[in-house]
Each structure stands twice: as C-alpha cells, then as structure tokens.
Image (cartoon, rainbow, N blue to C red; front, side, top):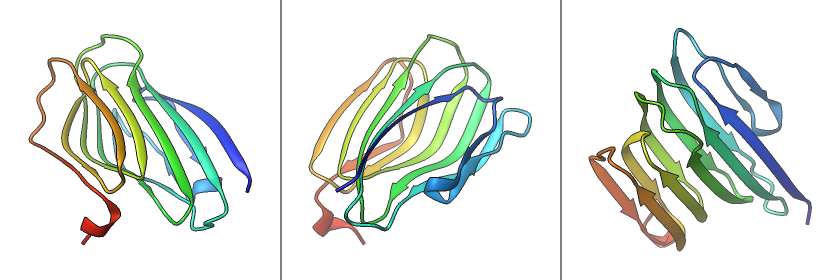
Length: 134
C-alpha cells in the first residue's frame, strides 16, 4: 500500500497544480472555485496537510474524496483576517484546527475527527460514518 505524505500552503494567491489528485488550485483575485482532492485507488493512503495562510481570500469548495484513504489536517498557520471556505467535505479522518478561517459548511463521512474552531462562525457541521453518506 503506497503512502503519500504531502503538505500544501494555501494562501489565496499562489496557484498549485495537483495532477496526482486530478485537480488544482487556481486563484483569481483571491477566489478559487472547486478544489477536489481525488484518488480512486483503494490501495493508496494519503496524509495531507493544508496550511492556510494569507488574507482576503475565498474558496468555494474543498473536497477530499475517492476510494483511497485520506487523512487530512486543515490548519490556520497565522491569524490573518478574511479567509473563507464555503464548503468542506472531509474523508474518513481529519484534524481541523482553525482560528480565523471561516468554514460555512463542514461535512465528514468518516469516524475520526478532531475539530477546533476559533472565533470564525460556521453555519453547519455534520460528521458521521460512511453509512450516512447520501
């Protein structure tokens, strides 16, 4: 079983090509639309760390999906203002540690989560086992 350990810096300005995940992050004046980390190979395991930095940016959708195992760490690396992700879809396991980044909707279908929010509000958080995925 191949294990991939990867760390990404999400700053609202620097484009990131992610061919291994059939996606990329393309910023346009602080806006990114659809970012979907996808691997359908059940034999792969991914340990992904996304460090959120910069200020004044908005991402519409951030997803971690597929048949592979994806362990995700989504974390603020500074206290910069005005970072927002409208929708986050987590895979089986995740650590979310946000102090200033706002996530409107956070959904997870696995069983092992550690979620910590600072002052930024959220409209909905729904976490549950794979059997609840519709």
